[in-house]
Amino acid sequence: MTETQSLFSCFGCGEGSNHRVPITPDRFVNHAASPEIEDLLANKMSKLSVKERDEATHDLHCVGEDLMETPEMVEKSLAEFDNAIKREKNATYEIAKGQNRAYAEDRFFRLKFLRANMLDVNRSVKMMLRFLEQKALHFGIEKVARDITVDDLTDEDKKFMRLGLFHIQEGRDRSGRIVFYLSNSCTGSCTPETLNRLFYHVVFNILIKMPTVQLKGLNGVYYDVAKLKEGAALPGLKYVKTIIDFVTSVPVRFSSMHYCLKRKKGNLARNDFILKTALKSIPKYSSARTRIHLGSDMELQYQLQSHGIPIQFCPIDGDGNFRTDILNRWLNHYESSTGTALNQCKDDRKSRQNTVPLRHDVLLGRGKSLQAHLGNVCFREFVKRYSEEYDETPRNYRRLVPMKVIQDLKSRGIRFLRQDEKTGEWVEPDISDIEKTVGQVFRNLRKRHKQESV
Image (cartoon, rainbow, N blue to C red; front, side, top):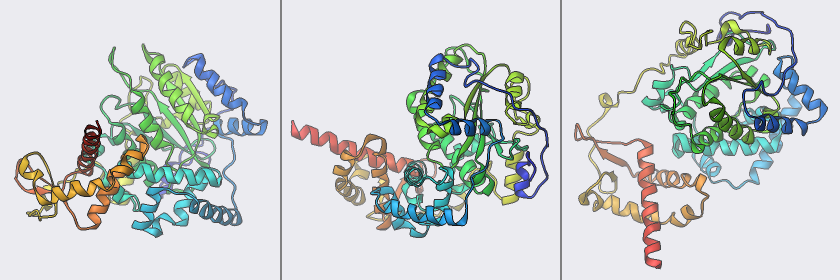
């Protein structure tokens, strides 16, 4: 395998460039952020041993070593993983085992987390549990123990796939790692949930399936391409944290991470906030392999080149615009090789059948007649069983309880239906709408309880 193999060689295509550049010394931050960010990075580096710092520097310059493992090491780690997870009490994991035990206990599924954490068992177990929780939050609890496919993406998700949020570079870096670009091209128009679902599909369904990614990790590049209007609102803490919580749960190791930032008005404040939140959330392994660059597009790309990343495959041109000739080449190849089409939206109406609500179905909508429907009355009583668990669950994970209720009801054959305003037909609503309905019942119960206790 050559040092800059093309991504497409993983799909059976040709090689990338053999371009090489010498290693040059660098700082943590090229004056792209505040001294506080530089101090934060320096502080994390100071906690590493000399050997760990050398390894981080080598990875950043694409001369580091791959994860070295033997069959004996893998078997030992998997056995320790199995023992460790048996000691954990996690509701989502128990639900996953109940749905599909083979999925939850699959050795290759668990091995992804072990490799992402350099065979550190405790960190791997915690990551897998977080991953299942995040998967339930973003795709629904009923899908937590099965593979996520293109059909699980919403039409809104698919709309953003070709707008430059993610890009898998054709040419690999000097050490043979795949270069994965992330951008802020859809800031202000893309929800964090959509971004996370697309990140899952690209990273978990495409990249992590490649053994080279599990063993070498990814070379990540966050590229600032957003052309924000003056006075545009900055992404809030909730927005940023929703993304970070999800991304750090996915079993992929970024062997190096480069933040490429521009000299623009207001950029320092926006990027400081994002970087500070991110650096405080990622483990020391990742923060030690982080570099922040500032400059024009040409300057940024030469800085990437000095770190072993071939710039002839960069999806951004010298003027800061996407190179439309290569931007979605990786996606086109993936679609043609797998027979999927991420840009096609589902047309559910063609396959709908005329559904008649049954007496125990839950009907979503407004009006006294709907609320008096037997299924809705029983539904509200059923939700009461979980009210204590809902109140005691930490706020960040409270959304899991409505998912649990939904799964419990569906397992009993109860359907959730909504009447289409245009056709008048009864159809199954989106899972997010069902979750909101269950969540509203919980909030109404809590409000009523407070009023009664006064």
